[in-house]
Image (cartoon, rainbow, N blue to C red; front, side, top):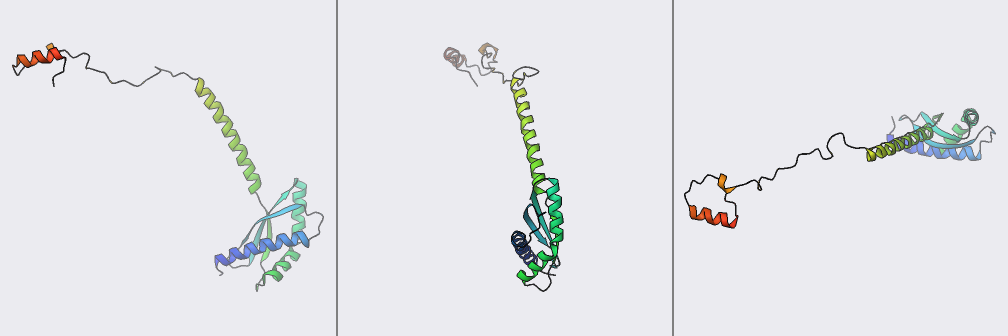
Amino acid sequence: MADPTRARKLADRIKVIVADALEKRVKDPRLGFVTITDARVTNDLQHATLFYTVFGSDEEKQGTALALESAKGVLRSEVGKRTGIRLTPTLTFTLDEVPETATQIQDLLKQAAEQDARVAALAAAAQPAGDPDPYKKPVDHTDDWDEDDEDDRDGDDAVDALDAAADVPRL
């Protein structure tokens, strides 16, 4: 069992080697505008999966898949020569679904933004169902206070008269 770091480094190296070999050594006319996007190697370094994208139609994608399958032996021997490892991993080519998925996600985000804009426009013109301000306000009881209602228990009429004259509420 190899170190995962070694497997990752080997995957990066295989990605570069295969991309270079596709550009310089493989002359198949079915090979379209192909890009190697990622490579993964198992921890035992026996199998490598290469992810690729093709710019073009579905027919060009199928032609590129056939060209990669037929060039697999040449590419594997090139990987073996340039990596110098004891066992050359088998190569498997897989069409990368990430660009199509990213496009679908962008379309969904665009639709969500349009829907949010419509909801915001409806909310701006909407009227509340009840009162415009449904929250209760605190009642100010200081205006209702009357000195005559207060029970005078201390018997100090002089202080009460001064307080009444000064309009100072007594606590």
